[in-house]
Image 1 (cartoon, helix red, strand yellow):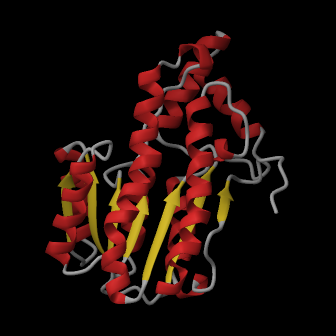
Image 2 (cartoon, one colour):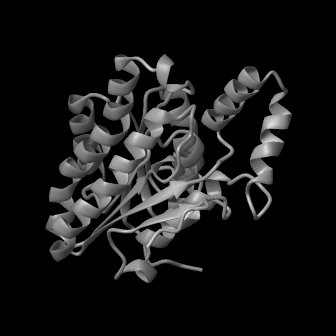
Length: 263
């Protein structure tokens, strides 16, 4: 299936691994050229090589999105190289799996800067390019902790709730420029970060990681962990013409695990 995105340019933060890399590759398969940022040149280059093998251009750019100057440099360099900026995938994240009483002020500040503030700043920097084209798509990757309480992911919950609210606020602000803004909340996704969370749970419960993983899967009605490609499919939908009239929405990709009812 084609999604009419051939020749578009996407900026993907945290694009060298996990969910970000899966989204970058999925968009590249639809003919989208990709600028991706991360903090490690080696993994960025590996991701860029995979993307370029699909027949599109890729620009791997080292940037620490906790820093405004790095964000400005990433967006500026990407737009200069590509000549445009049509899609923004806000995906970069960091977190520490620990209960509330172990989270320091620095843990809180860093998580807010790397995710919520970075999403705000990236959107602010890329919007002039989208407005100039009269078209744009922003997809914010949040997390199910926006809707649930998770004892080892308390900073995630606060930050992801902020991401969802920011999504709604920004969507109304830019709709007249034919720019949509939506949010994807991943459930328990098979990434290195989730593995670290499982390891902490296992240590606290004095059980094996396999048992924690099995417990997690038991709570997912569809019977498996979420794959990064599952999140990528939702992001692709929001970028595609099929979602032209959808904006300001947050969708859970969680296998049915959340018990909350959201209207």
